[in-house]
Amino acid sequence: MQQKFYPQNENIQVFIKDRLYPRSEAKVSVFDSSVQGGDAVWEGVRIYDRKIFCLNEHIERLQASAKILAFADIPSKQFIADAIKQTLRANNFYNDAHIRLTLTRGEKITSGMDPRLNQKGSCLIVLAEYKPPVYDNGSGVKLITSHTRRNSPMHLDSKIHHNNLINNILAKIEANYCGADDAIMLDNLGFVAETNACNIFMVKSGTLLTPHADACLPGITRATVIKLAKQLEIPVIERNVSIAEFYTAAEVFTTGTMGELTPVNEIDGRLIENKQASNIRERLYSAYKALTETLGEPID
Ligand SMILES: Cc1ncc(COP(=O)(O)O)c(C=O)c1O
Image 1 (cartoon, rainbow, N blue to C red):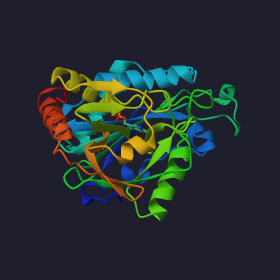
Image 2 (cartoon, rainbow, N blue to C red):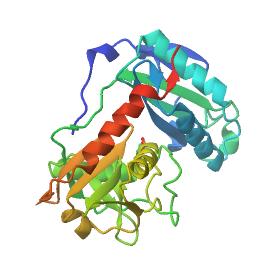
Image 3 (spheres, rainbow, N blue to C red):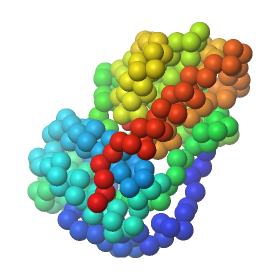
């Protein structure tokens, strides 16, 4: 899966710190901590039908990640929500838009690692783009298993949604070389954690299984899918799941704000064979789409 450039994004306005800038002028300093050390936190947020889906959950996770990283100043919920709405209105984005929301530790007085050098306040970036769901939710995607492990709390807790994405990027490079759409990443014990960009679910004998959120991001879409499964009385279990179990699943799908619920057709050359015509992803996807149509924070 390779994302494409949409001409609608040629002349977008980007919010940085306290105001909007045209795309060509939307820049951060070379002293910004995101440039210096990937020292920033982020969220991906999606817009459906004039509403911002799960806005509160995304802002709370951004603020929590910043607190874990001991940012000295974290913008309020109101400030972040207003910046998002201002950006969407300025760009006339009311549907099929995606926001890359980033909070960096801000500019440093000189290059260096020490957060005490950050004396100019944190920097909020709201990058809104026209971007329909990025995966093919009809015909599905092909995955490989990466040799790059997803971080466990032993190293760098995956519960922090930080900008140090190198381990995920290495996994994505492997996927690219193998002609796959994305890569499954294992945890430090060899169980499946998630893909380089999404959480992952499988279906076996009518039961939905997903890895514990130990070495993966506890995704907002993942949580929504688990909630919907309970409402639909689909048995759902969070446990250690090995790649061998995924090879023989009836259904496999990934979840994320960027791509929603995406069917997986193939993992490491093994076809995912749905012999009993299980339709659990389809049922969950219909319920998810119904939520995106009704829930959300109005843009104006
Ligand atoms: C590594 C990773 N896993 C999973 C997700 C999906 O999370 P969410 O459902 O909150 O969008 C993301 C999204 O940013 C991610 O980066």
